[in-house]
Length: 371
Ligand SMILES: CC(=O)SCCNC(=O)CCNC(=O)[C@H](O)C(C)(C)COP(=O)(O)OP(=O)(O)OC[C@H]1O[C@@H](n2cnc3c(N)ncnc32)[C@H](O)[C@@H]1OP(=O)(O)O
Ligand SMILES: O=C([O-])CC(=O)C(=O)O
Image (cartoon, rainbow, N blue to C red):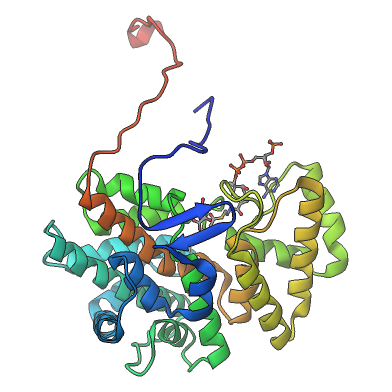
């Protein structure tokens, strides 16, 4: 499209789920800082879906449901082997696997509120197991079932890496999941809402959203940040690398944001985790390089890091394969997509904007031999 504003600043409707005002982000009225410092991811999912924090019984029941539905069938695990290998990006495999979940749900076409919630729990419960299964199948390893003793973040790391993670690793994963859970009408959430506004189903909404998140201008940026850090290689190469990027008018991944112009409030948590984890991991240069890149882009362009920038070194330090960074984002953001899908269904109207026509006019069909 020409004259493309990218819908910048356009308000498409009202939402109770998350709010961005300046550099303040809230989920259902709770400051992101409060949740990042105190909440378990399962509490945040419940909050986004039900508009209140769970009490003890509600949380216990919700965690149990997430655990009960986290298992993958042997058929599913075997089927992944037919399309998961190193040549297929894990986000593509995840898109297929989530779409496939509908095939094993007898109620996939039911549109009642109860059926929608059941499907939502099924997707949220299984998505970390699917990402972990994709990770392990790619590496030719056995898929691991969740452990009943572990919560969501711990099980996710356990199923991916095959060993019990440390408390520090679990805390880092939990915080990353909380920080990525929802973000107003970002591109993938908008995609999910457009899909279900046709009265399509939750599986279609989440599958489409995964496709939107995959792109490097959105969730896919975290993997690209890591590729950039690897390409730069060491602190002394940062200046020349950045100069080349600026000379070629190339974008620096993980930097800039459509809404936040004064900085992304989530970035400071990821920066702090990146500093601590890279130090513990014996790779402090990764963090130092990231800080230097951020300083140079701020000086040159006035742009600041977004949520994807430091998450790259956090996930790398957790021993996660780089192509799995965006699938981790998807595991968390599924909670937000689903909250928005619920909200869309509560007060639905087809989303169908208009375009200003600027193409040819008064054309006449010419038979092919005359063209
Ligand atoms: C979870 C998330 O989705 S967070 C975003 C993740 N995406 C990235 O990190 C990719 C890198 N960043 C970007 O591409 C952009 O900053 C976006 C897409 C995130 C936001 O874009 P917008 O604010 O709409 O800005 P847009 O892409 O239109 O660029 C406006 C100007 O800023 C420049 N700019 C924006 N981001 C960057 C960047 N990361 N590096 C260099 N220049 C940039 C553009 O080149 C453009 O310059 P010009 O006017 O001289 O042509
Ligand atoms: O809001 C956006 O445009 C992108 C973003 O930061 C997110 O989805 O978390």
